[in-house]
Length: 234
Image 1 (cartoon, one colour):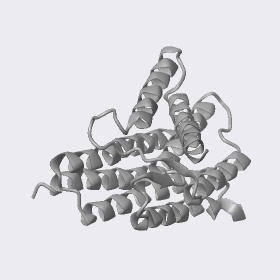
Image 2 (tube, one colour):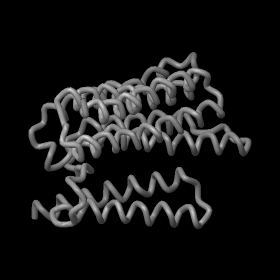
Image 3 (cartoon, helix red, strand yellow):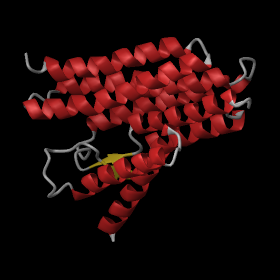
């Protein structure tokens, strides 16, 4: 029965993804923001469900599958819909961003079968890719509010290609799942968490947008991961 606590949190992630899809189909700035909020909440739930499962000692194969199914909707399909909605509807390349959904599904399926996943991630985690798109959509909305046209078609297509490529790559990246609260053996994860909190707080204090804080955190994650695994291989 206790297993339904983390599973319910996971399904909350899926619910947020479904709501984000509804908001994304309206293609208005206000609804984009609502969709982005849903994805951010889902990101928190995605982190929380595993933490709760490990704390209760009820991790299960069912929970893992539910988590991946929720992630492919919330963090794969939703960003693809965002990018699609920003491209001209008469353009032949308007369906190109849906490769992100395909890449997310592949990345999650590979993760479920990867016996080395406990040591490190292979490729950019799907939620991290979605956070890049939350930041990008935030920049787009801000540009539109200031009278601009928002992100260009070239930027949208390039970002779609980059995030898809990073997801399906085998580049080793830090596994962000904590095993308890101990420092030993998890030093790099705690350093990453503290660096992200500090950077995010600094960005807010300097009057920068939340979207800049998200991009800084992802950049720190990628840099620390590359540094960490380069050091291990040397």
